[in-house]
Image (tube, rainbow, N blue to C red; front, side, top):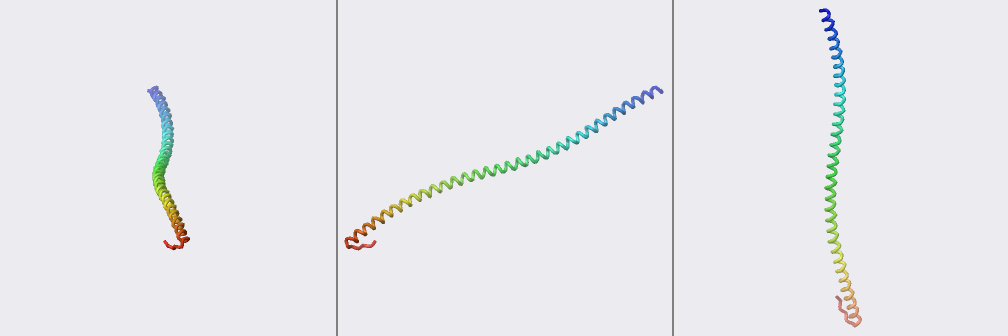
Length: 122
């Protein structure tokens, strides 16, 4: 019985030693796990910031694209109106030139009549 008790004490010490080692390992793993959990939370936070930044950039890109489309439509409309105005301007110049020719012809006719002694006022 005495030998059995000594044997049991030795086994108990071995088991306690293993248990202490395992406890240290578990504590270390727990510490590592907490560290990685914190790192994971930091990464998740960074990822959320990146997602928000990408979302904002996408919104900005969409707005820029819409503005670009509106600008092109405005440019097209402006060019159409400018073409109409240029045509009207050219027609007005033609009309003015015709009126100038008519006025010059009327003045010449008037001067000829005046030189003949007949005065007709138009």
